[in-house]
Length: 77
Image: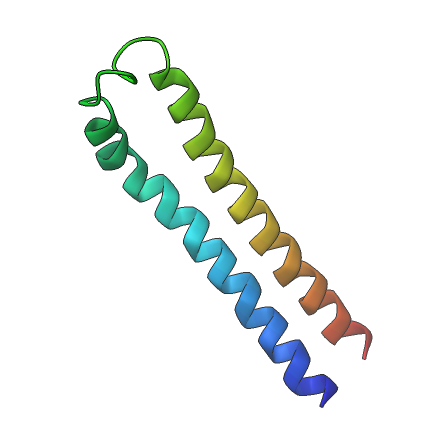
């Protein structure tokens, strides 16, 4: 049961990493659409940039961290 859980955690880490990369890949297109909204076309667009890229960084960081923890646990066993 523990081995199955460890495999799931490793898969979850990989999915987090891929989601973070996807945010970085997709952000320019989405931000271009958000710029067409009058409320965000002026100064608030920088807040949108910040939020998107912070989300991407946190997803990548969490995925890499989870993968490294799982790989270190496998080495110890």
